[in-house]
Image (cartoon, one colour):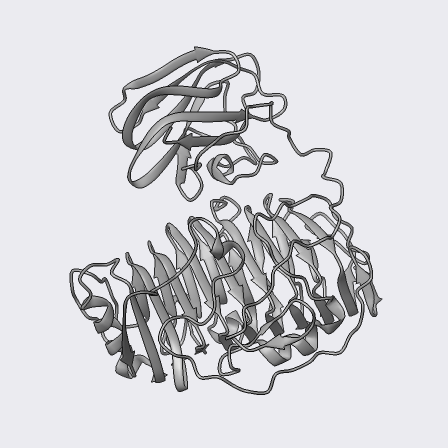
Length: 523
């Protein structure tokens, strides 16, 4: 028998938030060519997310017209902004062929493309029972649209039941001021509202409304799909969601200034080594808003400044580890970008005034007031104090700080058989608190890219307790050995080589090898 504990108006995981009035700006602005504002959060990293800015602008009132605009580009990377007005559905969406596109009739297909903005204009844009699918693509902006009632079973079906779904080496996606809606859970034929899997990174969901769904969204499709991450969720409204707000499997997420109402079963579910920074959110009339649920694969969180208003918690058991009722932190998460935190007390009113499609694309000014999109938002570094990291988190051996761009960030990874609980993606996640180990005393791990990179230096950062005795670096494209050595690898330099895949092989060890980061550099 599980017991429940109700908590009303508790400021959890940090210092008290200060209640304040929310000043609202009245005018509603219509979107124009190019995205409004600039990408925030993790979508601003890894070179940034600019979508179709600088390219041509076309108007589309059907799904077929959207596909045609993509297919008429000079190449799959030619920048384009597609202004959408009206209702996009199965009846007006067909497959279009061309050298610069790869489309399908049953979804809006953004596949194997880059540098695209889709923005709702005029009377609004509604994708009705038709999902948006992003696959093998990068630098995409979706703004000021509604996606509703996308089903994976029943009729009609689209995009596996996801309103917006991303998979297979996706980078730099900014989804802003959108409505993502369902009319029930999995039993009614729906799946996730905002899903990311199979190596999706550098994503931001901002100022959006997610409602009436069994599943809000996920990062990682299984406990072994941990190559996803660097996702920011801010100033979003979640209402009447059963679970997954979001579900995190591996990777890093930053979740701040969101308003959650009626999370019926669970909320932010950090699993399989995931780490979430959860700050200044407002949770109301909800259950199990933060923790590790439905698995024994632990996840972690750093929580501060959140308000819990009538939140109920389940008792802990082998597959339930709720963070409540006080939501203490069990890790620390470093955020690489600047951002402004609104106090949690003003978040419900502020988000109600700014989130969603057709609300004027207003944003917060960081001081509990909304501002029109023509006003540049101010940014500052938050002043919340980090809490102590878990004592089990591995530490890396000292290595000289690198110079230049780490080419491993945003790349892929694979290797030989891995030890239980470790992941290839852990060596390219910019986190020294995760690591990969081979399933035996020897093995290899590789970093890979879709296009050739010139690499002349790598840094192997070992986790505490690692015991690599001898090693070699290989050009995985040709099998050529670039460097050999013994003892702690650290920084390894060699003749600049153009390759798509580079391998670090552990030839021998005296115990358990553990690699936290496999960094790659051009010089």
